[in-house]
Length: 292
Image 1 (cartoon, rainbow, N blue to C red):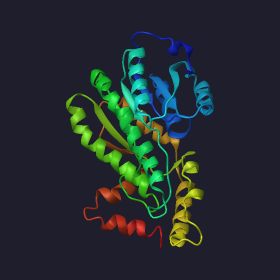
Image 2 (image 1 turned 90 degrees about the vertical axis):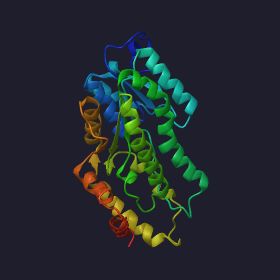
Image 3 (image 1 turned 30 degrees about the vertical axis):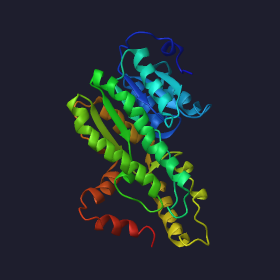
Image 4 (image 1 turned 180 degrees about the vertical axis):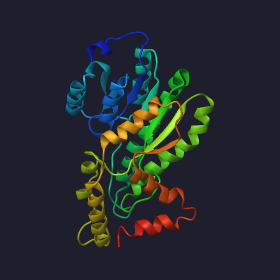
């Protein structure tokens, strides 16, 4: 389905740069889609669940950019569908200038209590989903000299208690993109990682704290209670999604851009704990305070 019948029926090369943004039903992805459209981009915005497009439609209408946003259904864990979607976008518009890998999901738990299936699911969404979109996009981005932006997290730099699976997936994304960056640059594609800290979106509501498998009588209960208390405090002062979107769209528009960007001063300070920590003691000493 499409927010714009004009876009849906369009054939031939777009006169605007074209960006694919995944995970746009709420939060960062929604803000990126609308902000990019306002900046002059033709946006193809994807959502996973039927009927979850209401907030995006409303925001696009208010901003006056509904005609510049095409909406598509996409489950990024489906490699075949992801490839077909990316290739169809490039064919429909005659170009693909940027991809923003934003879709993802949180998870709270610990390895002893988590099921293997739950851990695999976190990896499928947050790591392999990025692979599934990036792989077919690279040829089109080579052709356009385009930009690949992936939304990671400060959790892709600093391992965080009760986030083993989520941080593992984000570490994997960071490792892949850091390795890809010089290879992509050699063929004219810019690769950028954006690392938000706590962001005031529905993402945190979907993390599954209530289903974390850590009970009051469990061995990890006391540590988990400390973690929850600290986390609630962090999200009480969370960055707005628009602030992250401004960093991402800024990266699309900039002539020169570094590989790694944090979305706030707080995120920079947090990530710096690890990036300056050669032996790991600063990170583990810092996060130990979350659970004690």
